[in-house]
Image 1 (tube, rainbow, N blue to C red):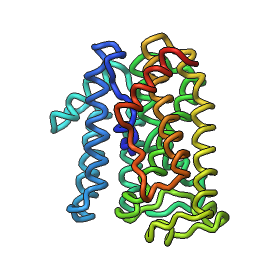
Image 2 (image 1 turned 180 degrees about the vertical axis):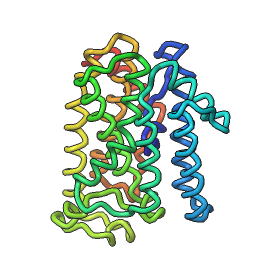
Image 3 (image 1 turned 45 degrees about the horizontal axis):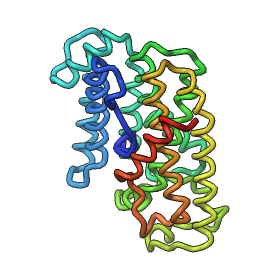
Length: 270
């Protein structure tokens, strides 16, 4: 979704009911596999397109109640049928992975947000459908959280994404803060970059805050899981702020101490 942000945040943890951990892991494998294809540096572009096109064909098989050809999609077909998961959400994820092959820059935040609506938000919606909590306000709160996590991932992975030829930052906002591609290419940390990152982090924080009602209204176990994910996002924002947004020299990945903090915040703080 990119699903990269879920490597930094808890997914299918022991908090969730055991019977749902395997379904979530299967869904993650689908998204992870497609994302790996899109991000692979050793595969020709046409091969990537063909592989993702095959994924799309497999989803179409499921949609038409025909048997898929591969074990992964056979498992996915059973889950979609058993939990009545909207198959359109899986097509949206594929749309995002295919977009990664063709779109390398984003002119404004609206375009980036549209990408997040396909690359990240479907995961949250799928999880809510698995648990049977599909009220519209729940879905909107979930979208806010997932969009924020995706933005946070973009901010901490600026260098890696640039090495893949992509910049997941709004160009008009870069321009307004005096930030150019040279900042990323040459790892330039200056006042322009600092102010730009502060703006991006403030927005990501607002999106998480807007979605916080979700964990407060969900049943206990799912609510705790979502709260952990939100607190994880806030912890990465804290780390990014502590480095003043200098993603060029500082590692902002989560470590064991961070997860201890998150567990404490989840258990004892609002």
